[in-house]
Image (cartoon, rainbow, N blue to C red; front, side, top):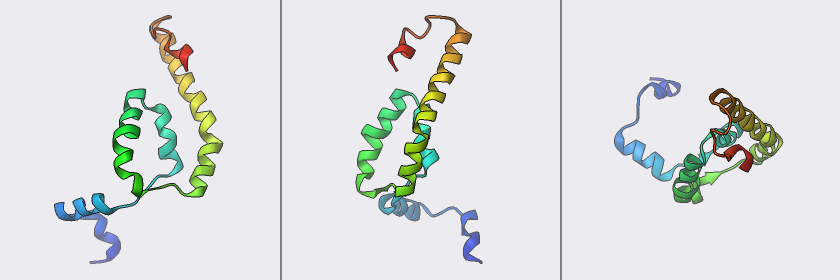
Length: 102
């Protein structure tokens, strides 16, 4: 069997556990920018619960940081725009003033 075909076979439970126990997690720009589309509650789970457990195994390449900083503002604006569109379809004042707080 060719090494490049190994992705078709799931790892054993032991191998999967070892990967999650020892792996270095590398995020690309799009993964980081997706956090702007998550709810505050979901982001809190990641940043307060999951990431602290992985803190010594998270790696952010410098180019990802560069891309993130260059595209962050457009994602923030896109998130607010989508939220405003949603609010406009369900009616005014249905968000309890949340949009004005962000």
